[in-house]
Length: 303
Image (cartoon, rainbow, N blue to C red):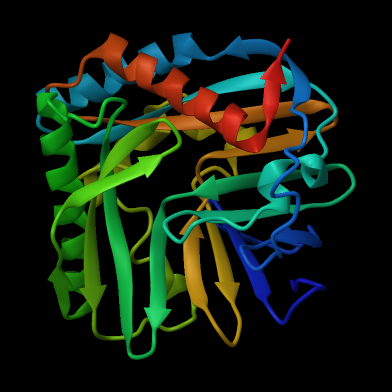
């Protein structure tokens, strides 16, 4: 798949099948437009959150943690809207994004997705690469909840263990904060020395990371089929991989903070990491906050 406006090549792994059906693409190489004239939001009728499924999966994950089967899991909420969505009439499509977030999308005349992800699986810089452990969310950026430190530690640990298994030398950087719209995450950069190949199977050794999955990774893989979200066909793109390659850049983005549309229905997903001291209502509130942030960033107004 290629962008008709540049030499950029795009490939998509959707849970985790290679997709070649979409032809119009969005990358951060788009020129800045409409800087001074913000486009009006598009109107959408909210149909329903999937709070019941979220609560059900939360209980299952907490039981697995209490039984020492896993230490961390991830559950997802979603919101469906009824609307005719046009990605090219959004500020997200028409604007260049900052370095710490990556705008992306792909669509045809019937369906597609558009988003801006902070989740970088890896970025190649010459002979070195970089990835990020991003986990722990707080609207006030105070990070006082006990679950935040636990979750972030497990995500860093899971990524470094994947590198150990692959025989990759790495160095863990200093933890900092990363803002996304009106809330913040904890972020730890990890540099590695051995460049990864471009083969999808080697990339998938790093993915999914514990940030969007569970820890230990193999233990979570055994139980995730019990979660309601994992059995929903419409979620096939969420947390997939969006791989960008050109003469200037070689990166793979994890597809979160986005909208999907098909046949007049828009769907937005949001995931939350669950550890031993996670509280259901706080996680549910976080899922709603993340979904609202996508609505605002993309430019959708509920009616």
